[in-house]
Length: 81
Length: 288
Image (cartoon, rainbow over the protein chains, first blue to last red):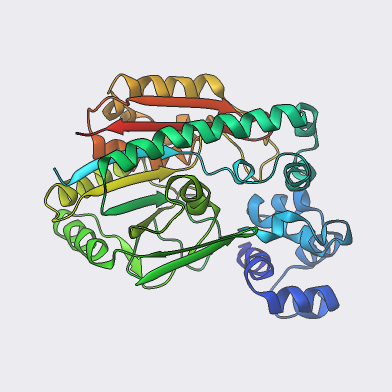
């Protein structure tokens, strides 16, 4: 199965501030806008980039799920692209 | 002699991050992908030395560029999911914008884009069987601005970003990238202004992969040796498997410049593995 929508969500999380803000407020709600498998949804909610990669996310997009992790909220990584 | 200078340089973000806290914060995300890579993390002193060594390498390249007095700098780099995503990944892309901007941490970048040269390369490609994608807007990212911070900090001349897909399978062959470089050289040789070219990226690294932290220094040294010997043409025979196995897919950006310089020998090379992700490499070719 194509992982297009999984990568699309991660790309939007990187490039679209509105998606980021919505995801921070209600991840489950914003994921409803993407055609994801139950496994993909679960992996996104778990926030583990390695699991996302195994499901077909590009490794460098998978990293962006950590943008939702409070531990990394102010990481310098997000101030560059 | 309108083709006046050629350089290639790594664009690793940690080159431009402050050694210490910024480096460590940045790398902690990569270590989530590959926890074993944290074991080889360099000390603060080692990070500072790497930064100084990279600055020296960039300074040598900048001196060569400035001596050549270019009127435009073509920048060959890969997009990393800023302008292109899985709905549309161009293999080769020429920027036809009026201006291009980008930001890296606290550093902002704003250059004029040489649309006229871009359009000429695009049309020359169509005439010779290389059909570039093109577009009128791109956002610059670290793949361009990390080297530009050191090589062209003041926007005295326009740039021309050209993109190569080095990240999303299937990627172009080294031979095809070499041919794109030959085409650019042909256009530059007939151009009314002085043209310089910069390729960015590499060398060996495995971003976003469980192999992050591995650096194939032997392969990188061999690449640089071949460039010093002026035998870059032979690299067109390399298979994608050989290049990718060594973590050198971004060397495809360099292959465009290798095609542009042809059999010229690299006049200066620098190499320093950063011990966390990337073999930093820097090359200059004196064309005149």
